[in-house]
Picture 1 (cartoon, helix red, strand yellow):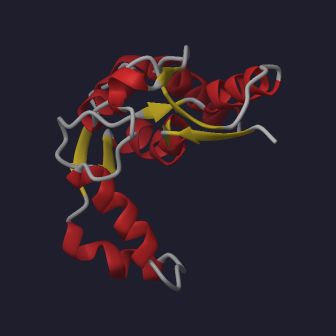
Picture 2 (cartoon, rainbow, N blue to C red; picture 1 turned 180 degrees about the horizontal axis):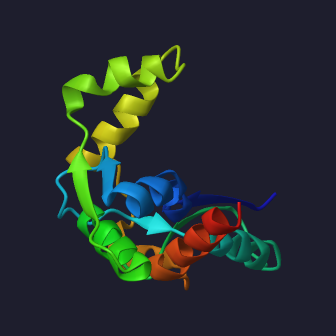
Length: 157
């Protein structure tokens, strides 16, 4: 039986948590570091579209489709995109690594180790697509589009 594994990158929509801080204080916190390191990210709408396309394809065997957005995104780019969309300065601050466990536990997480390991993997570069950036399938939706939608949604609520 043919089987496909769709492996999407970090969801751009994870920035939904940053809309209010960016709009209200002009400061957003990030666990991704360093701030100029590009991270594979993808819009959830691209994930849905690609999943639907894959279901309509014919193939044999096993395949892994690695999906990211049109280009990799840095935390600095997230801040500058928020700034452009909000019409105000927005800066990004790194959440110190040594505070993660206590912070996640204070937020109700019983076992923060897997989340911390995932973040370490992105930051240290050992979570990477097997096919690297050159071989991954690219989504069509840009970070600016996703952040604009998140801001509009926040303003309506």
